[in-house]
Image (tube, rainbow, N blue to C red; front, side, top):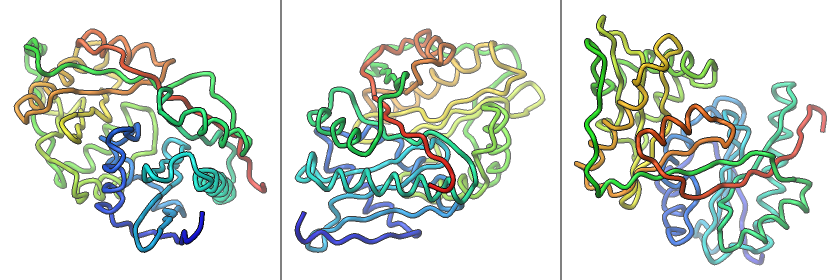
Length: 302
């Protein structure tokens, strides 16, 4: 590609990055809706950077390796889809994976994701395979719920209540609950605080369910984009799972998004996550499409 300028940053202009995502609305990025949650993640705490590709001063592509998911998020202007710039982005992403492996001393499987029905899916596959990536044995299944229909009201056990999650005052509460729900230490206070300041963050779409002692035991975070909503993430403390709290959170979120004029609500689940899939199906979500994951093994020293 002629006249393409490459640079990196650790202090991103979130609105500029999102504007590029918005330009692909006819062929949206699979994380177009929840991008604020992803772009504020821990890559900024773990030696990461965002790669920027510009032509004539206009941003035509960006990419960032995401440690929480061992995945590279990237966006391209429609005019450069399928070009050799895509190959360059995949190569750069692979370098970032190696950099992270050397930084942490850990081995992992790094990946790229894309919609299986993307117009240029075959070209993406070809470019990824040229970089040594191969198809994962599981995919991301996208489910949607039609919010133009009448929905049942959420049902909760006596003494439980769904309420708004209080932003900064409950930031650490959220971090602790998130880590407990997913048995993971990937969520950090810094990540949560960055999310709260992102231009795309809407505090009224953060929910928490509390037990009779007013202790938060489950949460649901929602995002909106071009008339669609997305739940990411949703979790329930292990001591309270299997009691209908996840379904109540999903339905409460759906009603709130209806009030905001949102017409479709989406959730994404790994194809092997039967429990999460069953929960969303009970709420009324229907399978929509698949997102493929292509991976490469990454080890320190390479």
